[in-house]
Image 1 (cartoon, rainbow, N blue to C red):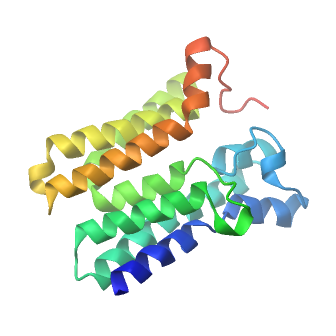
Image 2 (image 1 turned 90 degrees about the horizontal axis):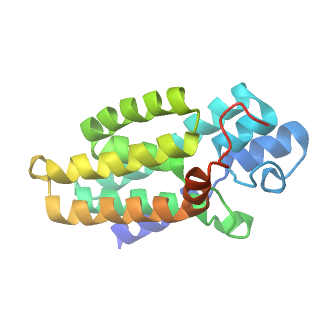
Length: 200
């Protein structure tokens, strides 16, 4: 029962949309009605600038980190419960109960979850993603590379993790969810119409 409560709490935590709250505070606007319509750090950058965007990025990452650590703490270190909490936080960010179930793509929260669950695969993938973004200026491409590569590397070296098979299933679920949320971005990447970072 405690584990179920923490998973539900992780969803409620993930449902807090910092981009929505900060945009409302600074410009009195609904960020989902501007730019890409996405409630996340990249759209915050386009609408409000680098300072608020970094704030949103860090706070959204923190949601994923806190959710995983809560899962670990209340389950005596069970990585499966921790992964379930992380997935719940991502789902909360994407479909927040407080904002009519209209959220973002969950990238920053996913970064926090993966970096806490499988740190070294996430670190390697993060470096690749940052290089990709610097070269191409496509945030969506970097985000997808981070999530897909983290999943693949973690699965390849899954024997070094607790309960590797179940953890792998959670990682695959997180990866599939992220790819699905980025389906429009993927289509634009293939057609050459995806927005680059810094472009209004």
